[in-house]
Amino acid sequence: MKILQPYSFKKAWTYFLHALLLRCPTCGITPIFPSLKKTRSLRDWFTPLDGCHRCGYPYEREPGYFLLATWAGSYGMGSLIGLILYFTIDLKFHPPIFELLALVLIPVIAANLLLARHAKAFFIAFDHFFDPHEKEGGENDDDRPHRETPKPIAPVTPNAKRSVAFQKK
Ligand SMILES: [Zn+2]
Image 1 (cartoon, rainbow, N blue to C red):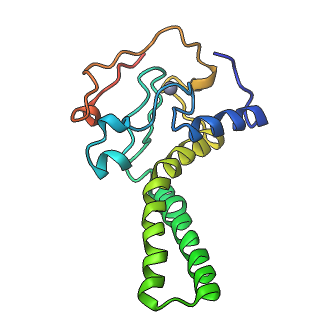
Image 2: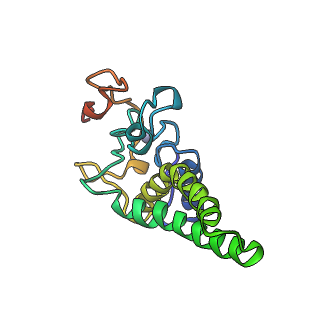
């Protein structure tokens, strides 16, 4: 893996693309969320996997890690869309209040569902760019040669995915 310079445009662009594809910020290969086939509930949809099984990058660094992503990214963007829709529809068409509410609330709920994963993926990328996650040995993920692939101790299944532990190097 090529070593990316800290705070370079190339590194920011790489992380941006990885987040856009909902992939691990470091290797860009492993998905952050379970695939659609393995998504059985809203909880599966919203909850990232434990970490990357290729490079060992932990997606959720600490409890409550995604609070800002959820509130600012997902709810914030959803609210902004709702406000824009509300004023646009109300000023142009003056529909009755229940029609107006339906025309605003349905897209807002849909937007929140669709934006939730990307809000978290971009938060992971943003955080890793400005505060790179370091391994216990103090090595940066991007600077570490990827010769060995960490193997999961337990197989990753939809029900067991949150209890998967990764072998440390
Ligand atoms: Zn990775």
